[in-house]
Image 1 (cartoon, one colour):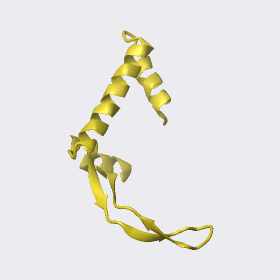
Image 2 (cartoon, helix red, strand yellow):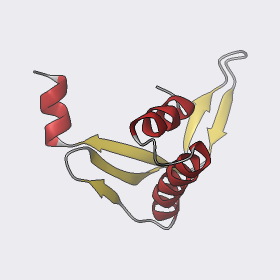
Image 3 (cartoon, helix red, strand yellow):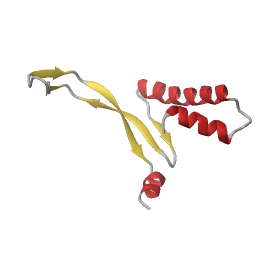
Length: 92
């Protein structure tokens, strides 16, 4: 499912909301998650999972085209850990 399909599904299930309102709600939801992660926080949605940020150390990588060594800078990456209910539904 892509973002537009999610917006359409929510709009179909909530006929009292206009499509523009649903888009604004979905944008606000995702922006809030990104803002919290960008500030070093964590977002936990009970029954769904938790989003957090993990730090990756700098390392020496390899250019796949030339095989030359390339220095890869340290960076932060998003991490998602599924909740217990999600894992149980996926494995039932």
